Length: 442
Ligand code: PLP
Image (cartoon, rainbow, N blue to C red):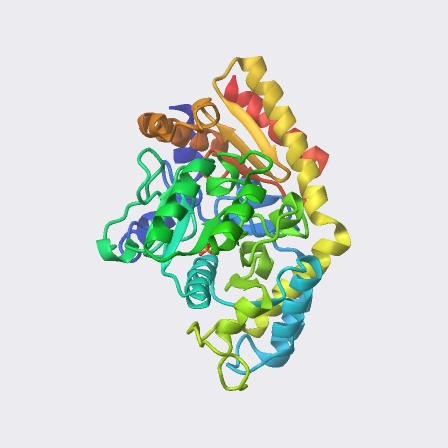
């Protein structure tokens, strides 16, 4: 009740605006990342580690737009340089622009296995293109994903497709046939993955294994340390391509992404979020030159297969320049490491608070990706996804209430259970946040 009262008295401006939105925007909100309970906040300003809403309330921002702003929000050194490019060329021309190449070169510098890169409009599009390329290159149709993984909202890879017990996205509107060439393996189960690959071999073969290298839903259920290397071996054995969905992890767990962290080389890498430095049209696919050649126009007389991808606004100067400058700046400032240290400090502090208050939480992090799960089930039962199904509903409700309580105490998280840190999260910011968590927990 305290929390609801806080929203009612302190957030009237947000309430009025988002109430009005309900008549013109389906459901009133278009972003699914932050909790909208009891109603969505309208954010007017973002700077560094903080957000300010319409009513002037200031929040520590651990949503970080869902991950892209590793340098901190609204980072002026990148903004200024992007503005210069846009002043010259405008945001889009539909023709080739120098920054397309600069971005691809820059990605290659930090991720040498991304020999070629195709800019697209989003992480979702990047995964769609990766799947299409893998099918064209191998001549096989079937792709295998991991239960509970999120690869965007395309028809073929929609969340939690077949594995009972993994979290499901609402699959209404997706025809059954759309997923007929998609298979799901239980998370972390190499035996199950091998069985899928054997089943597919009987029917021809597997085009690709697609996975989030930190574990499904970007590390909510973390993988054992050697998991990706074993999957690489399986892919080689069965002639399938290995696709890393690094939409979250690319540049966040290090400039070399999760591939660099685990020392495993995928055939294709999907990037998003940070690859446009928090600017729009963040996404694309890159990888081995001979696979990426399938995207060639065919007009150069060299590329054989022509796999269609497109997008009126893809590879535009604004997004490519933003990505290029952000990547250069992340490398110059060591942003992934600094953000990672902030994540370590936050996770260690949360760990202490959870113990102090005797709460049934599990806290774990991979650098700047911090998980605050309100039940041990996610970790303890990661080999038994069936149990997760039973836990999900009450867990979701509790997380929603806790998310609102964090917000009322000046902290914005991703859905109450994930916290992204950025380079702007100084020790003082993290310690301020921990004091606020202490208040909420008590
Ligand atoms: N893959 C992963 C692992 C993601 O977390 C997301 C988005 O959160 C996507 C793909 C989809 O990217 P986008 O939202 O840019 O379409």
